[in-house]
Length: 147
Image 1 (cartoon, rainbow, N blue to C red):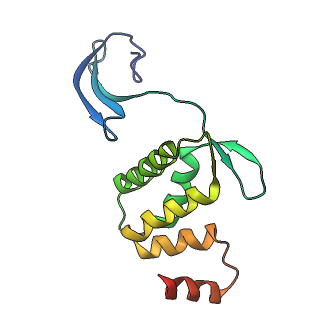
Image 2: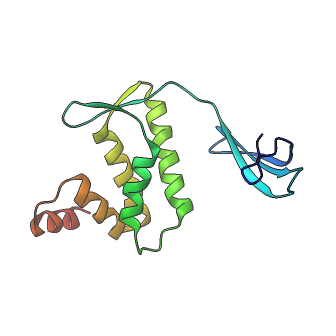
């Protein structure tokens, strides 16, 4: 493993543990050259998941797009970054359990909404306003009434 600080290629594993319901391994490492510590994650790379957009376009699944959307929704809200990671991991696990290599963006959006609603109602409403394309105040009122 190459050190991200000095570029040295001799590192020692100090600690290993499973994460994400035993679907990945987290390793704490120390560089033998500069003695700095860093963390790596190992995860089995599966098949490429394709997302079918509302307009019929297909694009590869991208965890970062989900992360950016959630981060916008939780801005200035008391939601931890660990909670964001857990939401993303849960959504990805749901997609993988679905068993198909193609999944609709609608399913992903609904999954994120369900999880955000449990954590923070304001973040949920912010995400819903973009995902459901709210046009005016009545859309917000309807969403709040149905919450």
